[in-house]
Image (cartoon, rainbow, N blue to C red; front, side, top):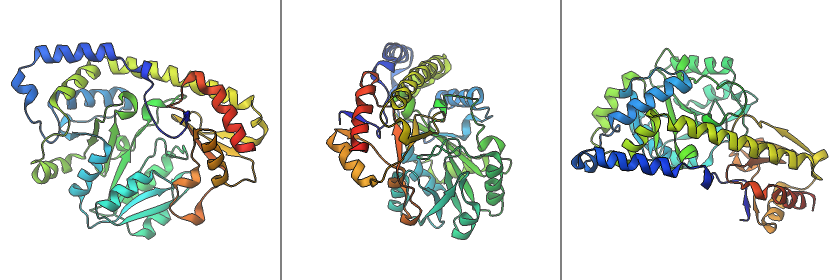
Length: 362
């Protein structure tokens, strides 16, 4: 595609290659060769887990023991780890609309998956209770695709739900949290959990393009993890883990994120300005533009989502609608574009908006 409003990527000129190469050399020169080439623990090397623990305290206000952290090669791998840890006999609840790949991962791991409808605050608690699910997977800080930020009252409702069953757990997916472009970061669900019912998961793939992700397990699950899954070798090389540990602990990650936020804020503002000055200006409603690397564009149109998708393809644009992320057809919300701009090149913004206007207006 000439322009892509669906896929996620890190801008090529944003990645600090020179810093990463320097740290890679330092690690290679400073570590014993045998250490670099050995299999790592199922949880990851101590240096990286300590660096992630310090980062979570500074950035998310979370007080985490490094032993609670499990490092893995991407969130998709860690989802399967959680299924093995918590058990396939339970029902797993996910958001509808939501990240459809997540549903497929659960289904391919042979667990019963419930797609729970949402209101303006997130998953509807009554519908969750009715489903009979024991495990709840949510994105409270920035829901995809709607951009909803779950209010504190709803978070406490889910913590209360989890406390009512020994096998109930909440998987808090904090994806995209680094790129909240306005206001203070939203406290995590894990940080207000006093019953050890929240499993926190996050990734560096959105910020560094590396498939390195991590879990934060409640303390009582750490022993179970090593007793039942400790035979696994680490899925991220020792060399990568040590380099990332230095990148975090020496302050480079914070500088990188600040630089990326500035870049994406400028890119978002340019895109919003182009939309407001375009022929679409009087026929769209923009929302959720501060919560992460996408926003919603509600269209005033009689054309179907499918017609507009085909017209966009003819313009060599890749776009998606919120309606495409629902499982339950009766709940689908039409005419709402998901404008993911993380992979958009700045010099293409105005032409991309022109092509989008042609696709929507015909």
